[in-house]
Amino acid sequence: MREEKDYVIVTVSGQDRPGITAAFTNIIVAHNVEIVDIDQATLHDFLALSFLLDLTGSSRTKDSVLKDMLFEANRLEMRLNFQMRSEKEIPHKKDKKLFVLTVFGGTPVLAAVADLLGEHRANIEKISNLSLQSAECIELTIDTRNVTSLSGLKERLMTKSAELDIDLAFQSIEAYRKSKRLVVFDMDRTLIDTEVIDEMARAAGAYDEVSRVTEKAMRGDLDFEDSLRQRVAFLKGLKMSDVETIRDGLALSEGARELVDTLRRLGYRIGVVSGGFDVFADHLKETLGLDFAFANTLEVKNGVLTGRLSGDVIEDASKAKLVNRMAREMSILLDQTVAIGDGANDRLMLGQAGLGIAYNAHQALKRSASVTLGHKRLMNILYILGITEEDMQATSR
Ligand SMILES: [Mg+2]
Image 1: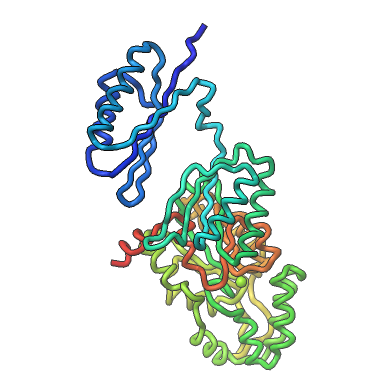
Image 2: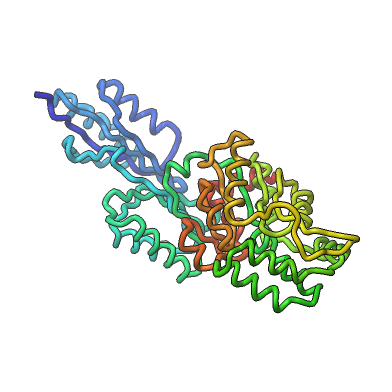
């Protein structure tokens, strides 16, 4: 019969300084003991260093290694705690179902989220603070092994984020670890703060008619392509020079330029895929230095819009296909892609990407996303990608 294994968890805590890990690992090695697992956390200058040691075999070794470690802790004026564990009491790492939850907001928000996790029996394994000065952006690694309904937990978290008006991201740890390389933005009401077609309609004197249809389309109550053709028909007769005036006055969403600049400096590929028009998308590609832009083409005759589109229409499914195609062309895995959008016509694209982010979104889109971001909080995307405030400052130097 195989011998039952014998473990001990040893935690050393106290004032941090160089040489602590060396002191304890040398004792462990001298006793010929194996470290099965190790973890360390430091908060400012307070350290907690934990070892899981395999002490199967001689009880003499067990006593002497613990005695030497206690002695060393005393010498270093640190605290040492240990707990004996049998093999059964040590859960396998592979049994864990880990997720990463990024929470934006202060202490009360953290308390509310922690309550909810406890209620659903999700265990917090690790907590890191991604912000420098405060605890405004916290990353929690949670084990959901004992959670009965993962989708139930996710829905509660999303509802809570809407209730508290905070941003929240829930990602499986595998997806999170595959570092992202391609970020695709929707244009209207995502990268820019308006729905351009409404602006064009205003210039064409058909604002009410067009914005009513836009609203329905973005809620998902109308087929996108039909709704687009209907709206473009209202633009018949609008001069290209008027369109160019609107283009030159386009306002980016708050944080969009800083976000794109930081992502670019960090080596991400960035594109825009829009159900809007290429006059605007190409302009953004130029001004923001994007890698690509796809959008619909308005038919123009003698410097005037005809009220028709030329070429194939980019709708829900084609947006998703373009994310796929661009990732393939750039030799980037779909898991490494991020898509960000606000409308119902972004649902497929968000679902297709490794990470789908609903930005300032309609309820219908929020429900299917695993990340929701509020209006004007585009910069939070950096934290969700695991980029800390320190990284951001380092790249802007
Ligand atoms: Mg949009």
